[in-house]
Amino acid sequence: MLDKSIPYIGVIMVKTDTTNYPRYELPGGFAFKGYQPGDEEKWAKLIFDSGLTDTLKEAEDIFEREFLKLPELLPKQCIFVVDGDGKAAATASLWPGEHFGKTLQRVHWVAASPDYQGKGLAKALMTKIMDVYNELGYKDFIYLATQTWSYKAINIYSQFGFLPYMGQKPVNWKADNYEENNRLAWKMIKEKLAGYGTANKLPSSSEK
Image (tube, rainbow, N blue to C red):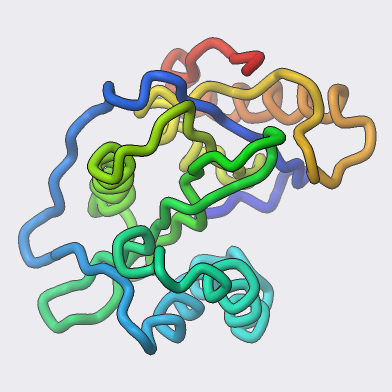
C-alpha cells in the first residue's frame, strides 16, 4: 500500500552482504513462476493495480522500455507469484541498473495485487530474488530504488539488510538538491515507521 499523504521523494537502498538474508516461504496455494511470453500484460496490471503508475498504458510502456530490451533475462529474473488458478498475485524482478557508474543488479518493480496484500508474498519474493541473485553468480552489492510513499515496503527491505543510501548523488538520478532531499526523505520514512512501532528495524545508513 502506498501512502500518498506525504511528499514523494525517491530514495535508494543498498545491500553489501548478499548471502545473508531471511528465508520466507510462500503461503499454501501460491507458487513462483518465471516470465513467459504474454506475461507483460499480467505484469502491467499488477503495477497499475498497486498504484505504482497512473494508467495501465504507463505500466505497459515501462515493461516495453525497461524489460523487453533484455529478453534473455526475463525467464529467470522477472518473477511472478501465482495463485492456485494461475492468476498473477505479485511480481518482482532482479534487473541490471546503472546508478553507480557500473552495471549492478537491483531489486526492481516489486508489486502485489491489492487482493493478495498482507499474505507475506512480498517477503517470499524478496527471498526468491536474493536466491536467484546468488544462483546466477552475481557479485558486488545489490540495490533498489523506491520512494517515501513506500515506507511499508522499505520496512521489509530493511529486514533483508538493505540500508538507506546516503552517499553522493547516483548517476542518472533525476533530483534537484539531492543531498538535502535525501536526508528529508529518510527523516520522513523513519517518522512514519515509528508511527507503527517499526523504526528500530530500519538499519544504519550506507555511503556505498
